[in-house]
Length: 263
Image (cartoon, rainbow, N blue to C red; front, top):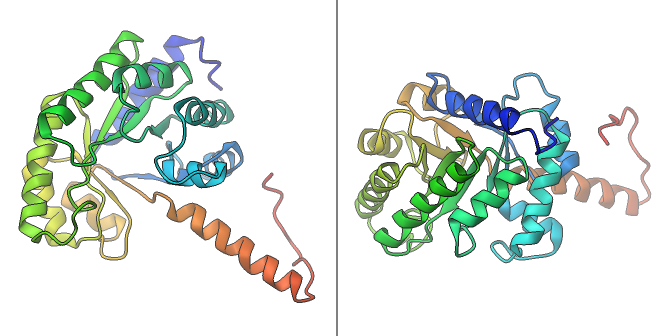
């Protein structure tokens, strides 16, 4: 595991993560929120890398999404990166006001990929933040994979679909020009929209979240999508299982047999 003082090891992980993003095969990333969940996922056959979920980390620490102080967020992602051998890409919200410095500090924690979201701020401001993130990684000598998130489908969702698609493409192109490896377009849309996004932003340069209308992984791969992740929903499934078990125990039930020792 990375001790974070071994720059060559971090460089190699970052290069591996970049290859995974641009390979013909879709990169599927399961989102985690602490060291225990990271270890469970890392030990599964087929796990090539891990992504943190900012929303889930916030919930686990008692914050609303987007309200986690930077030092606390970095402490969590440091523990996650230290717990596994695979590359870890971290959700760093909007860069905490200084994307370059935030990414630089994340790299020192063992992170080799980052998400930076635009929150639909002015395009020139958002593109500068992505450029700053790229520069911050470069200052550490690590070729960090920058996944630039646009909230074109998340904020003001009552806009016409064509307007959201056009906005996502314009922003995505600007972020790629600023040095982003991939453009994350979260939203619940179908294959037709995915095809338009890939055509507008670039082959193997679009990242999506696995929501109900999003095509299954095999189709996403055929459409030229780079990666799919699952955000806060992995934690919700875990908490749902805890909720159901607790309900059964409070109602007089007993623990089921065969519980795997995952912690």
